[in-house]
Length: 355
Ligand SMILES: [Zn+2]
Image (cartoon, rainbow, N blue to C red):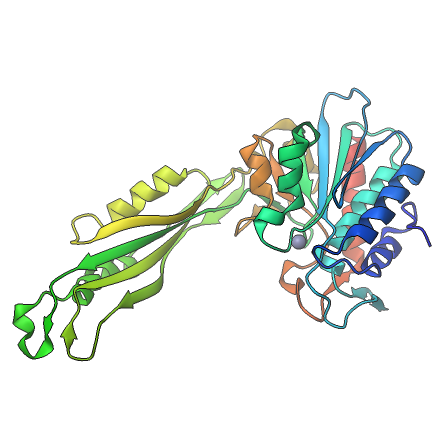
């Protein structure tokens, strides 16, 4: 049966979960979403891009709200089709993130006169390597479709608005010395010993808590790997420690690299940057985003980790995660969503989109 977008979003969530859609196997769910939008969301311009479906109103409103959700899931774990047990709907993708998709699709089909123009982006391949991410492809092929005043990604966030994200860098801290037989250790210069001072600085490091737009970002500077040693009787001439710095989005990658250099200043080590991703400012003071926070009753918190929110931030568009479901349940065989959260998210977003 065709997807019923105007049905209760709880039932719509179940219908979406019952269409298996592991990453790269999303043609059927995209076909069904496309057909339902063409049929049940009058006034929307609908296009298809690969296994992504995009739809938007063109009402000439002063602002545009983009609602984005991925339609893929991790491989099912014997948890499709969905199963309702009391208030909980179980199944692969119930929280991550077909309940969020259902809320967005339902709102598109039931709000005839939104206060903002609406763009809906249902995209593929979010759960696998980022080079396959459908949102990245849309950014390359259909950039005008991503223009908006605020973007809401319906990832599970437990009913909170989760804003921005932290940046991350990885730095390899290398010590070098002189190789020697350990029986005559005074002839050598032990590179591993030089890492001791590096670790002392890490263990006494006091991370910042940074408050931006009502979100607290808690930073961390951590050793995540150690390498060194040649043999049980050799003074090693090389050793390294890999350090990961998760930093608040008031810092750029360059700021973060500079900070890590400062932390290890004066030590006999070399630093090499091996990986970086910028953070994303929450941007919640911009009007379209501030209204969203108000509609959510101020329930806002920082997002940890990197998400597709950062793609929008890089385009200068304030972006948040907001969706039903507990992020800690994502990708588990007992994945479920509290159906009351589906209703609450639908009500909140309806109020926001009509205001
Ligand atoms: Zn997700």
